[in-house]
Length: 382
Image (cartoon, rainbow, N blue to C red; front, side, top):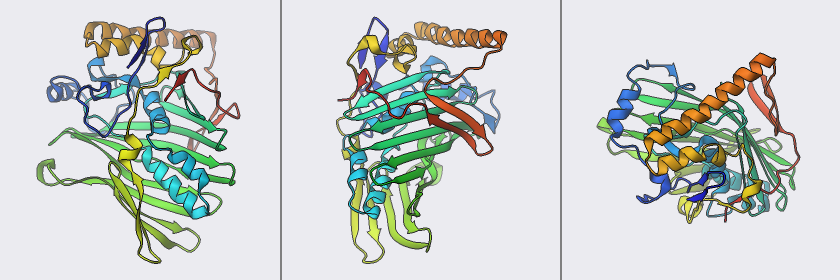
């Protein structure tokens, strides 16, 4: 954890597949089940939870924007560069599939990141990769991401909207929107979605990623279809967890080129349908190894809108378990946002994103970065 008292900036370690009882990321709310049931006592099945406010006791000391960013810049192995360096179209496609799987991150049941405020940003650099996120809508919550690596000539553009709903015994958060990864040296654009999150409350608590992820190269027509699921036995105990199964195929001929099988928290294997050869294309231990909290290189250059700055006072209170101070800090941020909304409404003004051109059509939200590349950030990952 990094603390800078001047701006109350708090940065914590990313989520990991390892169980670290002393980790900032492993924070868990006390009396968990009793408190969770009390939260949903007045919420009916099918209810939209996008406006549902969690008390600080159930918050991780970080924003959802930071969690999105971590899935891109917090890796122990450089899968992104490998995407660019593949010798053939198929080599690069397989590397993109592995990279897409690496963005699936563990979730701790019972605690959740803060809902980002409108205009909140998260700006971090790792090596040559510069990542910038902005909350471009608050209701509904929509986040945009732009990342560039000028050395590898790689660009990422995401625009996504979570839609959590309460189903009586679970919360299911579908994530709508599109992720693009561009390998500019090769003139290739890859489009993909992400799995949705299922938080089970009864009969046994737990968190799983589920659903179908499709990865498509627009120029070549090669497609991967990956199914995320967890099977559970009676009463939710046992079963086969964090499973990924799927295939890679040529969409023009529908010929299956490879079969995909494994677990996103361990290894993913690829079977060549032409010769039966099997190889490992993804190892979670390598991806999640040695992950550390970002550090601040230049505190004066950190934007006022930076997630770790906006929520710094609340993050400090959560880490110190000072719940009264945490409640006051959260109300302070939310109260300020309500005042800004009223002020804009009274003046007839519309909020405009600083970093993205935002549009909405029948297919959903779309965003285009205003700048061609993302500048280096004052917050870095070593």
